[in-house]
Length: 401
Image 1: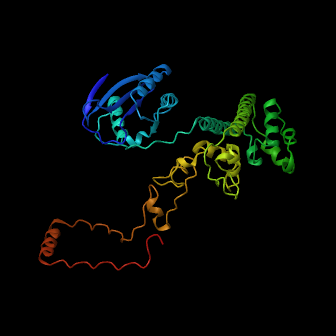
Image 2: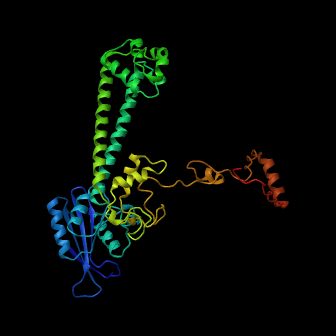
Image 3: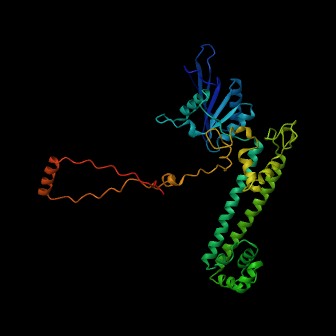
């Protein structure tokens, strides 16, 4: 443990603690006012293990010191134990972006100096807290993000199925728009089960594909071997497993959204307003909010769930709905409005491209004359004054038109 004194006491928080978090430890810096000397501050820096008991002991110590705010950096997922346990202890925890507190060139970088620097920024009110949703919304976010990952992984395995078919000269995807539709999946299951007759496979077509049986028989004629059948069976089993997991996540998300209630103003009228709509006492659930978002064009049920999981149910956390320096609601929900560049500036704004120039092209240099001719021309040029070149006339059309 180290104690030192600092002459700076112009911060907005009198008692502050900062934590520079690593995987197994956290460097804690505590800055509190001096007991006897006014205007002085006492600084303590020590290391804390990232175990549950060590973090709980840290919380007790900070509470005894009367710490008003605990600030920590968003380092991977290692900040979660510190934030959740200290928050449960009753401390006000702020999670800040490391990009906002470490962009000082030339500053030495160690865990100890980072913790001290973060504490000084926090006590002066020079950091901004990131959005950390409450526990029910965090659980909803875990489920929606896991579902997104599983859907992406299932899509990858579907592409691998087509890759295996292409390796066996099976051009089924050229005729069937959806390999995993009713007809396509029946043909894939038959191939994995050992059926090799193209006409028998084409007879499994249903719906509008019945008219394409000759084309299907031609596309199903290839070099499909036993190796491809085993590989196809493994891929189809993985796709089915992921589909089952996605359906289970859908059920868990629906149940959690029915149980999660917004205990704050959701933008509806007050009790005295008879215009209808939700209010604080209505106990609006997340499922009802998702249904209202689903009514917006371009937003489906799954997207509405993701939006609520990312931005939460309390819109008062975001000062404005836009993505300016004060707004933070559209960007976390991945609904940031597109900034359209004017046509005349689009080429200049595009990375790696050049804007059309209004200047005339630079002429190629003249060939180098011989030594005698160069001497004569240089003497003539020195004797004759060079007339000034007139400025080019302005163009009637702007660049890019």
